[in-house]
Length: 447
Image (cartoon, rainbow, N blue to C red; front, side, top):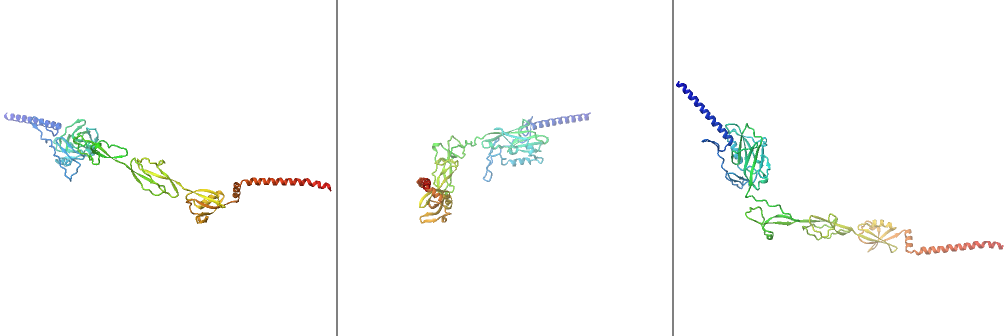
C-alpha cells in the first residue's frame, strides 16, 4: 500500500514539473518573439539577453586616416559627412558574424532587393547596397532559425549629407513596425523564419537638420559682362582691395556679404584679307577699340567690317569679335597718243599687264607700239609681262578706216564742203552737156 502511494506521489510530482517547464518555455518564447534582445520580465525572471550596447566613443582621425568622416557619437545619433560605412563598422559586423560558427553571411542581391530604403525628409530612396545593409543567418538562437539584418547608422542620401544628421531608423516588416534588437554602428533586427526574409522590409531613416551645418549660399549672382568671383565680408560700401573672402566659415552671428566681380575680357581678331599682319587686341567688355589701318599693295582700304557685314565704327565689344578688312582695287590711267596727240584714255585695274592692256586697246582700233618712260619710248614687247602699277602713256597707231572716221569727226566741214563742190561740179557738167547737144543740129543746116 505504501509502495503504491509513493509511486502516485512521484507521478504527480513529475507532471507538476513538466507543466512548470512547459509554461516557462512558452513564456520565454513569447517574450523573445515580442521584444527580441531588449529587456523583458516574467515574474521575477529576467532574460539573459545582452543589454543595449553602450555608445561608442568618438573616433579621432589622424593624418593617415581618410578625412571624409567626422563622427559625433551619442546614445542616439551618429553624424557623418559621407554615406560610406563608418570606420569600425565592418569589424563590428565581422565580430558578430564570427561569434557563432553557425552564423552565415547572406548579403545577396536577392535578399537586398526586398528592402526599401527611404528618408523622412523628402521621401527619396536609395538601394540597400548603397545604404550598406547586411543580411545574415543568426545561428545563436535555440528555438528556430533566425534571419537578421543590420542597417549602418549613417546618412546614405548624398543630397542630404551636408545639412542633416542621423537620428533613428524605423523598420516595418510587411507593413508592421518592428522594434530593433540593439544599436552599435549598426541597428539590428531579427526575424524568426525558415531562412527566408520577409517579402517587404521598409526602412525609413529619421534625419534631422544639423545645427552646426554650414547653410548653403544663394545662387551665384549674375552681372552682365562680369564673372562672379565670390562672396566677401562687409557691405558694398566697405568693398575694397583688402576685402576678406568668405570660404564657408561657421556663422555665429549676423554678417553681411557682398559680391565681387571681375570684368570679362574679349579678343578682337583682325582679318586683313591679304594685307599686312595685325596683332589681336584684348579689350574689356563693353569697350571700343581704335582700329589700325592695314596696307595691301594695289588696293585702297575701305574699312573694317563685322561678321554680319556691318561696318565697324566704334561699337562696344561684348564678345570675341573678328573684324575683316574690305578693299577696293586701285585703277590707273593709260593715255594713248597717236601722231603726237592724245587720242584716248583707258582705266585699267592694278596688276593688269601691258600685254593685256594692248589687247584691250584693239577694241578702240588701236595698236600699241611703245611705252613712254622717263628714259624715252620703249618697245611694247619689253613691257609685255610687266604689271601696270601707275599711270602710263603709250604711243599707238590707228587703222585707215578709224583715221577717216576720226578726221571727219574732227573736221565735219569737209563733208559739207566736199558735198557742195561735188554738187557744183555735177551742175557744170550738166550745163555743158546741154549746150553741146543743142548746137550740133544747127551746124548741119548751114551746109
